[in-house]
Picture 1: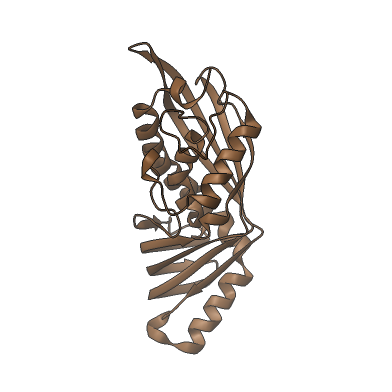
Picture 2 (picture 1 turned 90 degrees about the vertical axis):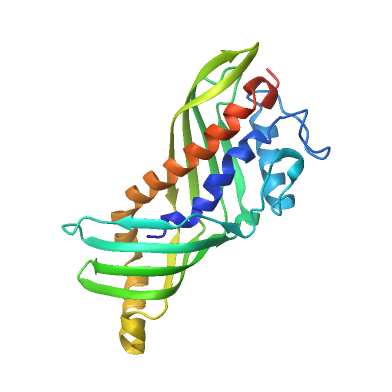
Length: 251
């Protein structure tokens, strides 16, 4: 239920990929990159996170810190160890400005094939209203109120499989699939007002969730990855369909 903290970065990440080299639209303080120049692409991605997280309309970048997301709804099979309904409503993510790219693969002379981005950050915190009902391992969980789910020192990997399309003399990237994986050092959770505000029971459940975060994360990460990837793919398709690949990267 917390892999989604990094979703924020996911919707914005495709813009960061593109920052590598839309020469006609890039701000003057971001240099264009040659296709496949990983060092240059990483520098530009990091510049966007660090210096342009409040948005930059000159190349269509929206505000990233804090980052507002769509509601997140997760429904787990009752037979699973983590069998819950979890709704995270009006979520807002903090910590995007600290995200840094470590490595990129692909983004060469052709859009075809696999492209990857590896990111890190000290934390990503998702604050939202929540509603939860179900069972986590051996413990029943029920409540609604305010929540804070924080990924501590996560590594985030984004994988894009793409094909190439030629149109009016330009080359475009068509995305076949986009997948997300995340490995946090720790997960910190706080759900206020569990069990209608029962303070003792609420504190015990929050402690249990934090003590067992590895097991919980292992059970819910796949549906989170799928939900994030689907949302990211929609955002990425909009960017890559609007801007020719040969304008994004110098090829």
